[in-house]
Amino acid sequence: MVSASRLSPVVRSLPLGAAWASVLVIALWPVARDQYLYASTLCTLGLFVWFLHVQVFEGIGWRAPAEVQDRALPSGWRHWSALLLGAAAAAAAVLTGLWWTLGKAGSGGWFAFYAVLFTVFIVGTWRWRAFLDVRSAVLAALAMDVVLAAYEHLLLGQSTGWDYHGTDIYSLFHVPVENMLFVYPMASAVCSLLVSALLTRWNRFRAFWSLMAVLSVVFVAVEFLGIWVFELWTVEEFADKSVFPFLRTNLEEFVYYFLFQGLSLLVYLWCHVHLRPGEVR
Image (cartoon, rainbow, N blue to C red; front, side):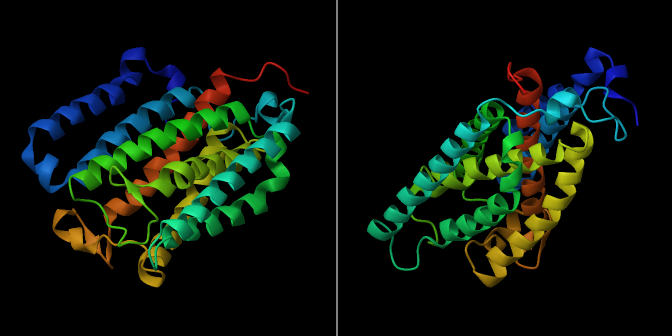
């Protein structure tokens, strides 16, 4: 594998150029734009993720030692971790209130499902919260909230991708309000917390791919639980717009999880490297 540090700036920028070229393909080619929008947009996203991956892991191999600054405790971590936990609890409380006041019978299952899932992850990793780079985590969460909401609006606005079947509390611009207020930022924050825990032992490259491997197993279980067991959403009615439908789901669903969790981790790590807190102990 060629180290990113040995690549010229032009070569390193090729994925970015290809990503913008794919946007033009989607805009101009009816098959990519109308028939296979889910798959084609994921190709574009994959190229952006590839570009960011090269920037974040420049010159870092699997066996490289962990960086000392990645294992340092940010100052004021107790205050910030309590503040973030309070913000998450407040968002969950607001959505629970909306569930009861605005929700119809049977709604809110989507929110409840992820509230339980995130609680399990946070409890399991809470002892490593001291190592979380809060500033980077907040920036990553805000960025992913905007990107994911915009992506979901794009797909659902074109009647492709998936359908929540009334399990969401309330939709705004085709996007469930619980996604924008809770699910998307919390998913990013959990990813940041998990990778910050691994950085106490491994370098960024190894921590990233180890976590990607574990989360890939998790999101397979999440997909089948959500679709088969709890019936919170469906994609099978869009089978004619999928490149590979199977078992009431499709290939795009799993690529979606993989790319967006990767993007969240890369945004956090990029901010962590370039916006490193000035005071550590």
